[in-house]
Length: 402
Image (cartoon, rainbow, N blue to C red):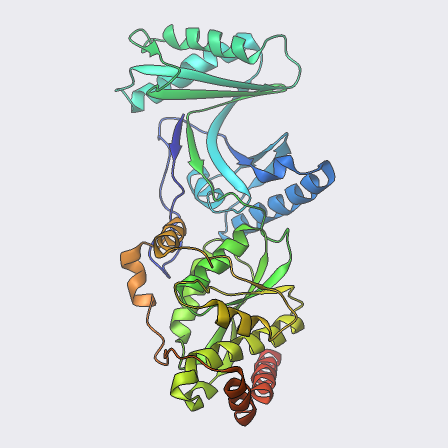
């Protein structure tokens, strides 16, 4: 069975472009087998709830792509039918909670009908891949049958060797050129040989709602990781000198390519021009946290999320920011290296060369250390609390108009 990588969304901010056909044209696939990972180890009531959320996410993703689908559940799998299976594979490959997907043909599980079907399936694949010299049958079975998985693998292998293009083949269970998988489930058997990775994690929406300070690529990665862990996110852009609206909207477009449902919130953040130069970064971040905390409570969020990492902050600053709200502040990339962040971006479909234009430095970025007394004095003089409340009220008025 050939394992295919997750299919990227393309350039940062580009359309999803669901146009690739990741399977041979000769095989007429009928269904997609979609697998999940972590859900399977949950208690039965939790697993059923997560499965319902995951199925709803799949259906909503197809709806957003204007693509038809019928989704059903069978013992640790989802079966997805659609009139456009190549596009269906691309959609499913970006659903959090799914670990992998495979296009399959459906045949009878009766051994007398299944064995000829296995031979015929190999013949179709061999027409597309004439260089195959070795193969293996990977069989799984669920339900009550008069045969075992080993029987399917052994006799299915015989059916392949007896096929017109099978005489030259040899069986190689370690590193075969072709892995032909057979999943027998009750009265149906599913045949496939390719598997596409999906992002894994938990179904989006199965955990709580969090507010994300979406201000740079690091925070974009943090938002993506929270989606992957099942959270619903409220992304916040601070509109002012610290970041352009265009960049924030490009980040939002990336999140939407992973079927994030929600809206980017723009909060005014213009007072930074008045901050003393040596205190700019600390005061700016503290003010962002204040505003985000106020909005988070209004939106019933359970936590704040930032893209802070030790490569750009200190333990002292983290302590300073954390004392501004009773909400927990989550920092999913705190201990990562730049190389790890690049790997996350690549998993999201953003290569380093494509990300450079969107990694613009903050024009106010000035590092400096502040004593607690001076920090308190500056914030009192600048009336930061009142300004934070005013900024959130301005945003709420704008939402009411919209």
